[in-house]
Amino acid sequence: MGKKHHYKHAAALFKRPLALCTPVPSRYSWPMRFKFVKMHGLGNDFVIIEPEAGQPVPDPETLSKLANRRTGIGFDQVLILEPPRQDGSDIYYRIFNADGDEVEQCGNGARCIASLLAERQKSRSGELVMDSPGGLVRAKIRENGVVSLNMGVPDFAPASLPFTTSGEAYIYPLSVAGSEVEIGAVSIGNPHAVMTVASVDTAPVDRLGPALETHPDFPRRTNVGFMEIKAPDHIRLRVYERGTGETRACGTGACAAVAIGRKHGKLGESVRVTLPGGNLQVDWAGPGEPIWLTGPAEKVYEGTFEL
Image (cartoon, rainbow, N blue to C red; front, top):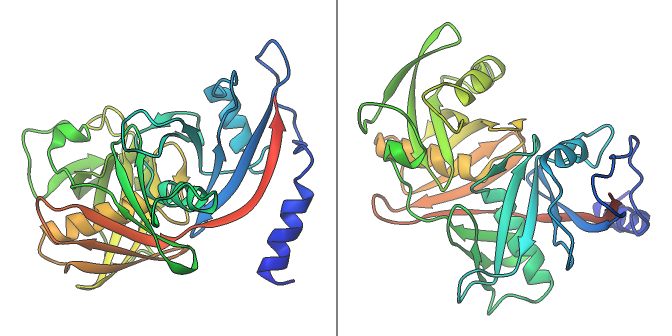
């Protein structure tokens, strides 16, 4: 079965309300049916919800149940679309991880939102301005489902993550899970710690990922990247995402890794980032300049769920 036919079939299947294997108990005074769109960027998958008038955002426990890949819809993050809050912007979006916690930014999710808005013909000349808790993101819609995002200027100030340390440095030594490690730290609208490793294939992602995520020096937790530098224009990367675990791809994680690699003088301005789900392109001219993220965004199906 071809991909196009498969997605068409899936869309037809989900015209009726999605039946969860384990119903989510209703916390509301009356049943509500939410429409959603399932999308992904290199396998980093999202449920996008634009609540109708009077519909609240589902509570964290409900979102966590919906994230379950066996008894719910299954996703890495939920993206909630709301009316613009700033003049000149097209949309405001909120991001909730699979554990139900709200976070600041999501690069792959923002690309999916931009692609969806372009499909709904809400873009101006192929460009969009989207607002989020992590700040404004400017999107350019390119051919073949590819979207480029201006993710803003990387912020290396520890307070921006936040990260508790004596001052800004190139490398921060940490004791974690019985190991002494060195990390770089940067905010791409959300916090990232990045380790350079000899090989992502043997990197201790399962052991150090959750330990670094919850390290006490990151009071709001952090995303954790494991970067293997292949060449000045190519890295391999695995990311353990805060509140979700390891994902197939992470857009802000790709930006963070390139920003750290550039700061350390090991990477050039344009870098191909190979993740488990595929390749992203990151371009950064250097300090004081915005970092750009380019990659695909794909719709899988549309559906409904009831609370």
